[in-house]
Length: 74
Image (cartoon, one colour):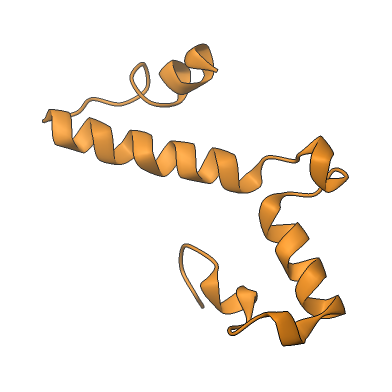
């Protein structure tokens, strides 16, 4: 995992400040965790699992999980 983070961030980009590096690392780790498939969820990403549960039992959710997706909502 350390090599993956270094290759995707530190070795590829130049940062003007430490805060900029921290911000990019936070974004990278969030994206990595968001898109990671987990065995305990039967090969689904956490987001896919939530969407699947929402289609089966929409009464358990206050909001539509599709509207909570990070990134551009276009």
